[in-house]
Image: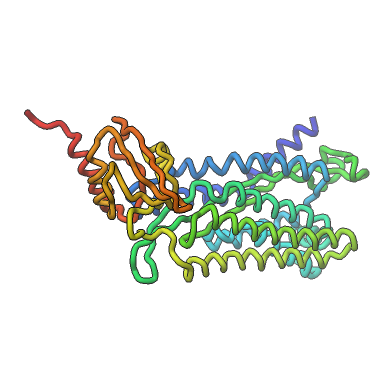
Length: 405
């Protein structure tokens, strides 16, 4: 019975944590912002707001389950003071309003550095003194194991899901021309289950095989992980995979430092790992900025044909398996050099569509598909001239209106 009560208390600890609700508000806000930006660029949304929200839940819950097994199996403990410190660093991050800063590399890395240099302070508030004492007595080598696992979670999410459902947009080039770009923008909330030291009278776990003689309760902490990258110099998958490699190397260097800290009992090595992850994550953000500002543009109009900026899911374009970045140069046997010519050629056959496409390797291929009645005007291609697409949509709607006899 005590175990059930402790589990309920753990769930309540998540529900009363203000960080959890701030993360939920941020998740919804970024979903709304994405839809508005896509409508502003193309006059249509690619993915709905709820699709953006729910797509993050599955991966978050899977990793939450794995982390619970890992933390409980190895008996990873967390003191209330350290949780408060991490919550404060995350709160500072969220005040920036920038999703790219929402990272355990920054939030937890900064918390480790603060914990290492925090002096012995005495305040008039007993609860604050207790938190400070919790932070100062925390075993940084043991805490470093949790830190490494949080870095691993971030790396896995970026590597596996970072390039999913990227958001297309139109931006101005250095010369003022419209070019395409993709924004990889994701936010995950991973609930982490910890043991928390408690007195014998309040603890649900009065023993544990790895740490006999101590008593513990359960606590759930919402770990927020964000990833944001504006990609204009290459395909989204290539850019995100480069970023995941950066995160992997950062985690590897931090792992070496934490392992050495546990072997030689040197807390300073954990502080170095926290500082390294903090600087490395900011460095990655700087690299993203420099690539976007000074790099070449991938989504530009070629000399022949039209480059596909994105494809709307469940549309005719999606059924024909046309990929992002490919070039359409012939429609129904007619060469196309503008979006207007594309839609004119498309109307040559109202029931069937045949495209000649140059893929990302430079090879030419044919794709074809039947235009169903319920396709209406939702062709599904997003190019660099959304006004032409809107003209075509309006023309299709007018042609389908009943005429008076």
